[in-house]
Length: 140
View 1 (spheres, rainbow, N blue to C red):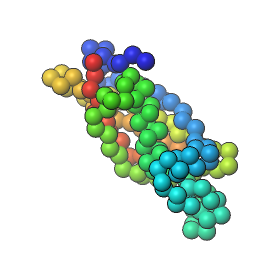
View 2: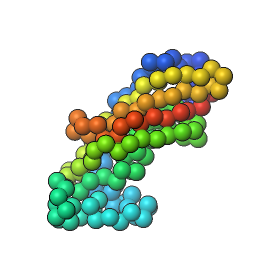
View 3: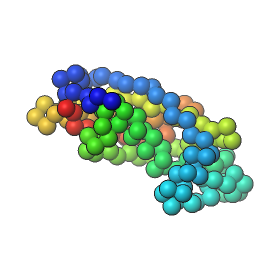
View 4: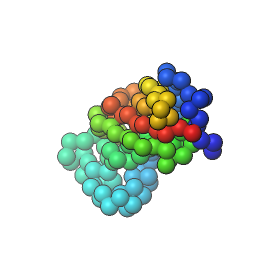
């Protein structure tokens, strides 16, 4: 994939929405990779017993999925120099999985550093999953 060039980007540019599907197999794989074996992410009966509607995606998996969409847009994950968010709602993952919708807007450009500040919007079932999801990327 080509690295996005500073001269080709304007404040207000948008990308997406991109759909990212999460299935329960993804949650198990993420739990194994991250070491986060909290049963609310894998065990439907346990999740319901603690008041959740079903198993839920890991917050960090959700942020990572948004980051993957950003990486695709910028063309190189190494160009993401800052990335932060607030976790605003759960991503409920029923047996047939769930879809995240990720889109981005270029909020500002810094000509001197050739960096862009990008705001990501991440929703599941029409509800914002991440809030104040901002990244700074270094453009070519």
